[in-house]
Amino acid sequence: MMKLLSLIFCLVSIVLYSQVEKNILDLSEYPEKYILSSKINETSALEFYNDFLYTCNDSGGESEIYKLSTLDGKIVETIKIKGVKNVDWEELARKGDTLFIGDFGNNLGIRKDLTVYQVVLPTNATNLKEITIVDQFQFTFEDQRDYEYKGNFKTNFDCEAFIYYKNKLHLFTKRWGDFHTAHYEIDLTSVSKSKIAKKIETFNTECLITGADIHHDTLYLIGYTKEAAYVWKFYDFEDHNFFNGKSKQTLIGLTAAIGQTEGIAVTDSKIYITAEEMNYSLFHVNPTLYILNKDEL
Image (spheres, rainbow, N blue to C red):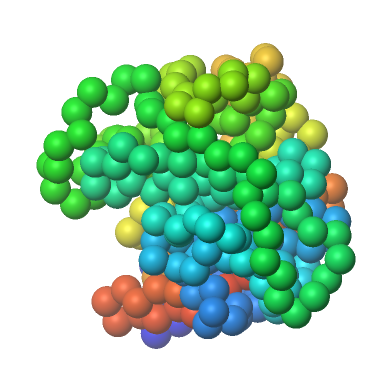
């Protein structure tokens, strides 16, 4: 089976190179990969802070954040978030020790309760810690007018990726309709508990965007299609218009081989990627942490 996947990967690579020059890696053959605990089989986000990784499960998961070792992805601490429900936690972003939790998964495009929670990450480790949110707000996309159900996986107002950058939250939508992403901004200086996500720009990512991170003014987006997974890198942009600078796409593997890639975290030297457990036709992929050298993307 793995030989078949390798052959398919080679064919996909040839097609890509015949169209445009793009980077290619195969994470299924990568040496630094670690199976994650079944407790985080639906890992949907990733954030780095003080030499640890943080993740959470998405729709239906517990209202918990999991602190992971950067060496092997093992859970070193479980942090319960008191008094809130995990409707569909899809992303984490950070400002200092403040962690933003994005409860904005919206596969059907009908949610009117898109919410961002804020917590302060604890500095001392215990086997189990319960913390309380320090702030929260709901938001709407400025250009969404229709909230009627149109069918599964058809909306352009799903969202699974955001970052904190220059006093704003920047959201990147998971557009099922055209495999583009739209970049929205939420101004955090507003004291309103109901905010508007302002549309800034769009980009053809050729995949469903599921995670984001920014490091030293370089934006990273991760996503997938049924066939393959990708990382996009954006740099040399002006201000917060990420898509007006330079960009690079890396094919990181076949979805059936590496899983549904959902989280990305970038440091000075490493790039961490998580994929949730996936059963796809004849293929099964365990929840996995991949660790790359930063200069490989």
